[in-house]
Length: 329
Length: 225
Image (cartoon, rainbow over the protein chains, first blue to last red):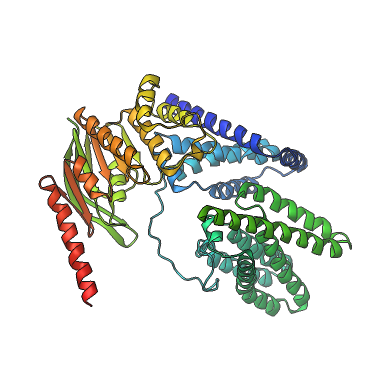
């Protein structure tokens, strides 16, 4: 049996390698150069970071790796195809999940081994996991406006859970007189919850139902801002009530999360449907934001950055809609 | 002889029941058609037979070791040629490539095997998957809407091919909305409707007439209102 699994791993690995090389060949050279530089810089940073090996850090690695792996989603048609062949779904998941262990290996080899073990277990779990039911019951979420996108609805269970957790941590922060904990969870938690929602992948059809780009732009911005406010406002009010001396910082965090969410939204659609590119460029934009925050020039550069991003975003949406019209004709 | 016995099969998605107390029995050397309205559970029944989804009840697969399933929307890997996909599908099932047979079958489907398969049309993609399944020599062949997206000539070829495979002893299930085409090739018809499945093996044409009569009376009733 083990030789058969090895054969299947080799088979799917060769296939993935072929696809990767061919996709790479199709990419413009500046993109490849940019990705190479980015990977080198990230690798260097990871190699330089020194994290002590403790059971806590190993547990964090396992949780972080599992979270990253859970973001790897196969289309149901792909799952059906791979399920037809013994162990192929497991092997495919294993290869993908083991690839995600590379940053952990760069950080610390023991972290890498921990992530590898998690990868194998999680791949086994995912391949045995049953298919999602075709008919899913839509439960309205109090955290989203009525006509929200379907990809918002996908997060209808996770978002309320995240909201409750943030609230609990804010209260714990207040009870322990730990303002830092409350602020980190309030800002970071809401930002992560909203960004995870925005980055949910949807089909091209969800854009192509719009008649023009103006309608799409208006709708997405309104929904992003509204959903962020609905999610954050009650938490912000609790924060102001518990930490009345820091109300200006709370308002600043509130405004920053809205700005960052708009940044996430525009980056997503500026390069849509190339999600892998978005997942690289979004962290880069965050680093850029961090750099801007350290200089007074950030006040000037930030609007310029947003103006450029909006232009790309608008252009890409128009391109998608125009292609759709061409298909219709 | 290969046999498939379904005993007390139950399948539900959450609280919504799809199949309830299904009892059926099939033999190899037959083409078994599956009909039913949209969402009635034809694909679910095929997936249960293949063993790819969980269910309550028993499905006995006697002398059936390999199952080939053609899904309604087949998947293709990006930037892989038709020929490479076939090679992959054969290796994954531990089968060797029979080039002569591949070209013999492809003479019927006329697929550009050296082109990237993600540039194929839906019909071509179905043909490619079908080609791979046929070359695999599976003990049981489950075809979910194989005629959808195929041109008239390819549909006719496929019907003839399935009949020829049946003569050679193949065990085939075909789900389709095209009842006339199914009646032409099927030995049995299983009607999947109202949470259950009933098999008919004689007077298959009467089913088509029954459906037509039913539709006529419904339209008349609606127009009278």
